[in-house]
Length: 384
Image (cartoon, rainbow, N blue to C red):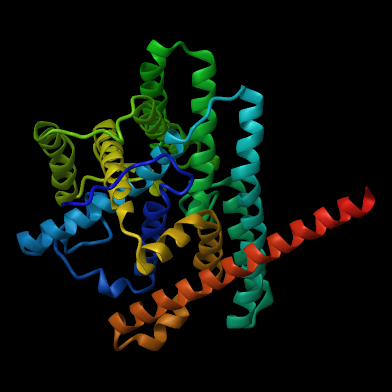
């Protein structure tokens, strides 16, 4: 008899998806350290959002299709994460919602800003032995993170740096906070319309040189939060679907996403790129829901590998914050120089070294946090 995954609403039901997502995010960011592996000379213009892969249209159709499927997963990852937030969303008063979300998202963001800036000063001085330069570069890092810009921005000839992977924390904060306001102020029948208007406004804001604190991404993300919320409300995840239903999903969601990706029309929320506007980001959001559904069915696997990935997913917030420090503060391009003659080896070595650093840092932060909480509790007991 064929084993069937039973989907239950549990605290860790999305850990597998989050764990795979974290591994892929570090992998994707590692490509920028070894650009020669992903850039080739080309006579074609880089006119689409796959601008970092100039050879994309020159490779054979089968590898191109396989690559498009991989990119489809990557582009649907952030929408899937935001949908997970909507799936577990609970309506609160507007004030309580902002307060709770600020504690969960803004507080770790602030700690990440401080940690990244300090590490950037120390590591750049250690690598280059020039304190004024380290301070100058770190000021650009601090300003970019304080303003919450997800791309490098030049203002009056002065460049400030992007805030790295934690752009997502700001976008997640705005998406959930705005959605909570919508639920409080809008009747049920108008919620879908308001959500679509807000997401469209966020898309239009993406055409500005920059939007502070990732408000544009957050507004677009409201539609993904609503998708997850609607799926939970209508109990769509745990249903058994007919062959007709599955074919509809294949032809209306999966295939269109793969086709768009094969032509370079994708959503890159971090860079505020929505190639076909609402068509792209809504289709990507629906694809994210499909991936959430598929990964929940993979929860039937309970081996050591899947268990390790779930553990990674359980600490995804810590990993995202520490990966930001790793990505911005450590000059990995200097390390890549040691692998100039063998970039593929260098890519693999640096990727696993980065994971080791991130996991070690997460282990230390988690244990220090637990120890601090125990000390606080003991002090309260003694005071009583």
